Length: 305
Ligand code: ADP
Ligand code: MG
Image 1 (cartoon, protein in one colour):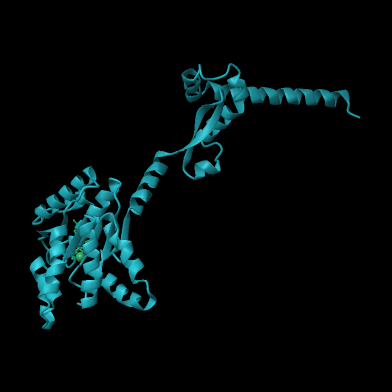
Image 2: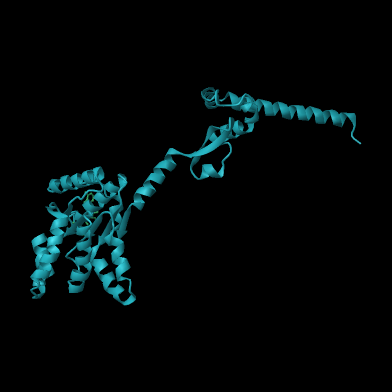
């Protein structure tokens, strides 16, 4: 049986607890951000909203101040008071850091790279040194700006040509990243590797799906054309079909090459290996000329110093 003393102690304790609770709640309600919220939403809230929402207010202040860490906060969200059915409730919103991270992830997702060097992910037009290649930079900026303004219209792409190591691939990567920043998707494909993969795909019947995947890219950037080993099948049935489709659909298409357009013509005709398939080469070149303007990229070799 409880003694009177016990009973009294319990009551006292409960009172103390209640007091502690009340003090905590008062502090939470008096919080500056909470007060601002209550004032701003005075009309929208029910008369007893503060009493009924005391626990929410308390949770809000503690979560905001990091006194308790919710799974939402660990995932990068911060608490916010809202009105819900005339009562106080909490929602969690992404923090600025989380927003930036999400924006970066969705930007990254807009650039598809097939066998491209990893470094192009960091390529920026703003970092492009214009020495001896200011024209290429201006053309690159013009292309991305115009395309972003009217993504559905046809825009002639660029055929970036110049010696090894001057930064053609870098510039194309920077263009892809600039487009991504403006919400436009592009696909970069290292052409010599793609050609090898296509030859390997003949055996396992994946030629068409592989070709389809790049054929329909909203913006296609073909890197290092003319560096593949020459194959009439790649030229006529892969590149030819790809470019024909891009031309018909008026889809923006860009190229980089160590060869000028004139040199590429000879390469595709097989002149270098003693063939003379000039007509076939011309058919490809007509499509490339329709799709892209030749732009020389100069400057020093940035790979070897
Ligand atoms: P190309 O395709 O003309 O052969 P790359 O684009 O591969 O040349 O560039 C050669 C090297 O120089 C790469 O390592 C690339 O990352 C670097 N590079 C090129 N342009 C820049 C630049 N503006 N800023 C920083 N690095 C660059
Ligand atoms: Mg390159």
